[in-house]
Image 1 (cartoon, rainbow, N blue to C red):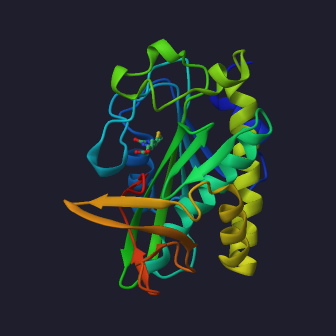
Image 2 (cartoon, rainbow, N blue to C red):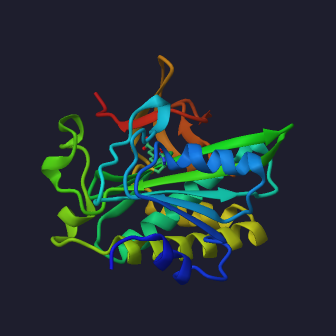
Image 3 (cartoon, rainbow, N blue to C red):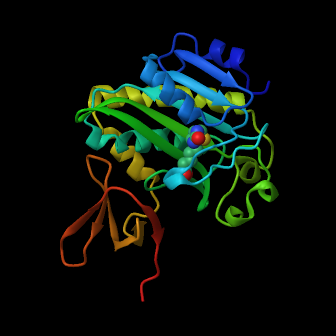
Length: 263
Ligand code: BTN
């Protein structure tokens, strides 16, 4: 059975994630839709899913390729009682959930800070978390997840064909988007429950186990600035820690990370 609203609502009945399910054949962006619902006071766990996005948003104002009948485009509304300064933890938590689910289909799944899930080094999923703050606290956050599931490699934008992949290309057959979506919401629910009761530490441990850049020399580009260093890990707020080469640590809050070759 293909992805559809009634089946999703039925399979998520009674769960925190999936408390309300909004399914669209077409929408501009599930993130924009759920953000509006957040402002209107929708409950935590409200989920939007679209078969097709006409203005899928990536990080840093990029476009997220969102063709119909192929992938999963979903956004989840969360209302954790946390400081806005640590909201990046929600991106990392979502990444762990995606990595858990994709690992049940194939090997080679890794996480790349801050928001990419990769298979054998190629990006298969991106996560865009947006937040509304109330003072220094999070009022609500929307976790937007795009997973390339059944798209063929040749349908990926040419600019990304070498650095991206799809689950179908890795597994060798088309997959049920419905089953994958349900598994994702269930794992998110479990991890989010753990996060609320135990804090970020267990999520940090899980994230680190999936990370493939630990110890590697990387550069992070953000707004024209470039930072370089060997990756030490992520801190309790979800920031990336780089060694400064002099025994100190640099803390990076945002940017595009890539591994560099040492001279
Ligand atoms: C990135 O890697 O740049 C993040 C991509 C996030 C894409 C998802 S698809 C569902 C949700 N709606 C959007 O408009 N964007 C996110």
